[in-house]
Amino acid sequence: MWIDTHCHLDAGEFDADRGAVTDAAARAGVSGIVLPAVAVANFGTVREIAHRDARCVYALGIHPLYTPGAGQADLDTLRLEVEASLDDPRFVAIGEIGLDFFVPGLDAAHQTWLYTEQLKIAREFSLPVLLHVRRSQDQVYAQLRRVGVRQGIAHAFNGSNEQARRYVEHGMKLGFGGNMTYERARQIRRLAAEVPLEAIVLETDAPDIAPSWLSDGQFGEQHKARNTPGEVAGVARVLGELRGMPLDTLAHAMWANSVAAMPRLAAFADTMAPRTA
Image (cartoon, rainbow, N blue to C red):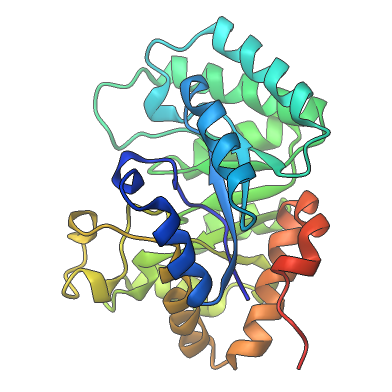
């Protein structure tokens, strides 16, 4: 019924019980989970997990936090892996890529170069992108526009109304997850309630950004609890409350939006799409 469009199920936090986590997600009504890679070193892992679990699909990319030490050889590997994966229906996007100006010590110019080159790979193969935009919404958008990629998701979106408008008008979807569940996250909740419904997708970013009910309601403390893909069902309930929408209507909209963001998901409509009553 629900699609988690951003979940790092390959993370070490899930090594002891990964199968139980996805089984619990299925019981919560989660029928699809998108696993973005973060570095060349985990390309094989996300692919293997996606092929082992019918609920999972994957993306390939180099996360900005993994750009130190990454260079042209990594980009060459990414391009080869993408080309080799085009016949794999479980491969759906380039990601997670983007810029991070929150974590100190990262080289902004090097990040930007790697991000831009990955956008070019996405454009070459007509693939959507899963974007990391932490304190970098304007800079990520600028390169997106310059390279000409117009499909994908701005993950964990936390920008202004004007920044949201630019992404949406460019054709991107905005990912909302655990942060939206905190009453103190007023701007995120306002965006979730007011941006066009067709611009929204749901996510967890598990094991990070746990929702309020896993964190004693303390906004900013969410990384102390392990998030899981099953929590996207609760995120959906919050979005339904914010927008005054019944969950069955919301589920169909979220599926349609996820497919619009990642068209290769359409191949899994029989198993992932919500059923019409």
